Image 1 (tube, rainbow over the protein chains, first blue to last red):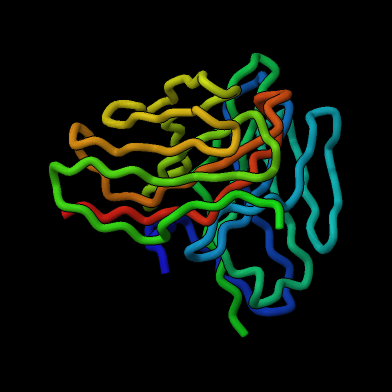
Image 2: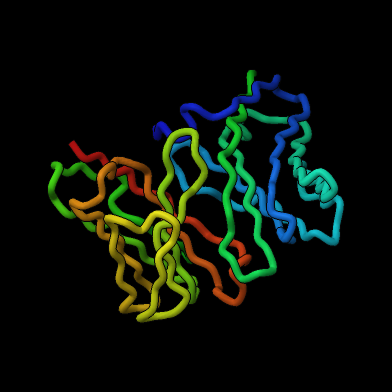
Amino acid sequence: GENVGLHLPTLSVQEGDNSIINCAYSNSASDYFIWYKQESGKGPQFIIDIRSNMDKRQGQRVTVLLNKTVKHLSLQIAATQPGDSAVYFCAEGDNAGNMLTFGGGTRLMVKP
Amino acid sequence: DGGITQSPKYLFRKEGQNVTLSCEQNLNHDAMYWYRQDPGQGLRLIYYSQIVNDFQKGDIAEGYSVSREKKESFPLTVTSAQKNPTAFYLCASSTGQDPRDEQYFGPGTRLTVT
């Protein structure tokens, strides 16, 4: 597969446990955030998004938490499965007309 | 199937040669983007186009060129002026109504230049 993510921070979890992946941002004007999942050799796929007027948003087995005070975003995956193994990264958008900015990513490894 | 396609998946070239990466979408999206992805780094924007026959440089445009003659297509040429062209290249598209719109990504092209 691709060597993307070779030097990324890695989170290793046991199958069935919950996973928490973190993302820090620096732009105070950012008001929209997206989490993407990228499996080896594939393009990123949208998981969930959140706007700055919300603190929490839930999807299927995933929850995104936004703490605007400390500029921190997290992705929680419940009952992590082997198929969740991938690189996860956040993207932020602001209200100044700028393009999305992507974070470096975290590799999630699920141990059976 | 609606989506965004990139070809080829793997591409090998000799140093000094220009090479063009293909990106096609049938999502009827106005905006298209090219990113470069290197190990340990986030996606870096090379070029983007918000409408046919118009495109803008991103953060790392030097050594690259693009064209947008058709809405569906946004090919990227990696020229011999690009000092470190070996990388994973991702193409994306969005509706273009807002720069923050969700971007849909293609499967990527891995370019190796020796």
